[in-house]
Image 1: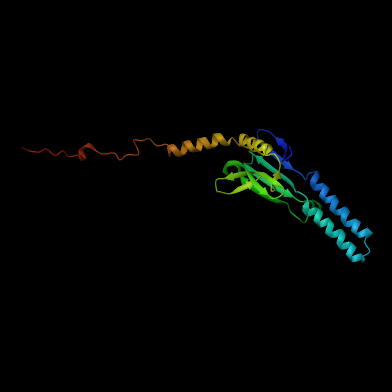
Image 2: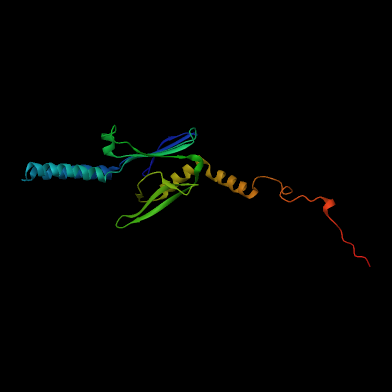
Length: 201
């Protein structure tokens, strides 16, 4: 898959992963090559050459996509999304990954969001919808191109969580209320309390 890769799929666990693509790596090495080229062929002072190299490395890292993981675990009842940049991989003991943990039971829906970016087209992202009104993307970035894969991923998650059945059961419970009988919902009246008025002629 171009959007995400299915890392693990079992009845109790579903895990997606996303890694920097060829375009990200090309930008990274291209920026570094440009910085070293400017430093090597330039006639500036050494401090400026170091600035060229450091600046090029920074731009290359900034332009790269993150390593992202989205996990659904029925055993723990949690969904966990995490992202890690190239800099965080090098400085893992000092820089922690960005991680979001939520309850599986709070997920009420899944949708594919679309974002229009000038000169690039429309980007898409699979988003989890929670009962609290919060929404979390299974990836932090939108991807461009055909959105069919995003809908396939959304359907896979929906099937794994059995959201259609859960939502149907929830709607039925709301309709029935607390399950009490209709007779109990009316006030019971004692026949002795009813008085009949008879008109005397």
